View 1 (cartoon, protein in one colour):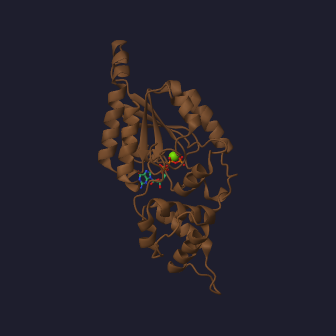
View 2 (tube, rainbow, N blue to C red):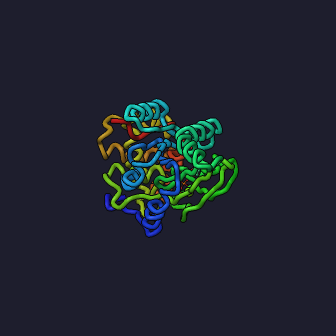
Length: 288
Ligand SMILES: Nc1nc2c(ncn2[C@@H]2O[C@H](COP(=O)(O)OP(=O)(O)OP(=O)(O)O)[C@@H](O)[C@H]2O)c(=O)[nH]1
Ligand SMILES: [Mg+2]
């Protein structure tokens, strides 16, 4: 992957304007981020749009993230007066807590509506965020049934869609949106590694080898243990990092006929290991 990576197709531009147009219809916005990359998975364009609304930041996929660092992020948000929650969308308790928090935040709006005669009006929520952070999964979990499409790749939801959780809650699913240029080289790398950027526009060998190098600096034992490679001597040494990458690929049997290392196959395997938590619970960004 080069630092020129960019993925801001037409449907994302359209989604941004759909979000802008429909914000007035909702009482609260759920901004889903990826708990493994809480900084890079927050879209600055979205942030500008929803800053004035009732909002909860959901650090989703918390089951894949380092719980101590997730706790530190939540504490930081709370210290800043920002409502935030760590969520595993597949955990019923987490979803119940999210629902309760949404209802609590929206209660004053419902009370006002009731005073004007609109008794029992449902809470209306919009779920936004970058691709593949689990927006649609959270909506299905809140509805307790499969109402919207989910998928293990970015760009699954293509247009806004209402989903009714119950008589007391209506949810609007939105396509995941990135932003032009995607920030620093670090942002791009971790967005690609986490699965927010579609595979076709990324150099997977670059993402995997740089990802492995980066994870080695943060969690050296995880890589050594999973791939049975030597301990890191100098985490910044690119030659050593590349040797460890090749050695891990060899250990995993990624070898082409003639004995050459199949770097591409190992890249997919490594990225999949990271995305499914098989390397360990990893967070790539700590609060500042
Ligand atoms: N481990 C784990 N996986 C999750 C969680 N939430 C969602 N997923 C998985 O993440 C993938 C993406 O989920 P979606 O709900 O389709 O994500 P989305 O944000 O709606 O994605 P787009 O519509 O493409 O923007 C799916 O494979 C889900 O099963 C979670 O809390 N933990
Ligand atoms: Mg979706």
